[in-house]
Length: 129
Image 1: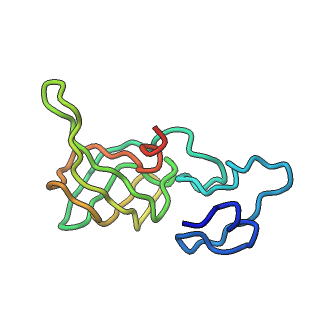
Image 2: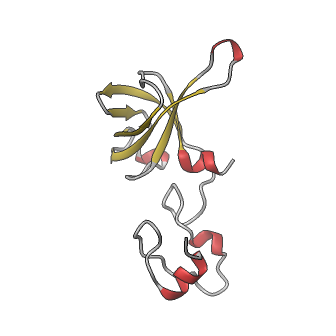
């Protein structure tokens, strides 16, 4: 994996093929790193929602652009445990359609069957914990 500072200094693409711009002089380097919200700053709070519909390998969520969802984001799907048990990981959904208040994507990893009502949380904020 390449050093991000070196990539920005040379104006190359990062590991996902996106062109990385060098930060302005004196700018906090953290602000120059793309975030889950795609606003130029780090994600501040997690995006949480629920699964509203499942059709084969596609899932619809009740969070959308107004919540900070963008195409290409990944959401962890999980189910609350019974009687205080830890939540159970179900799947990961990669978003490919975003509307104002809803989104939809393809299941890219699966540990069980997704159900309507399962909980979702964006992967980027989960990784920041």
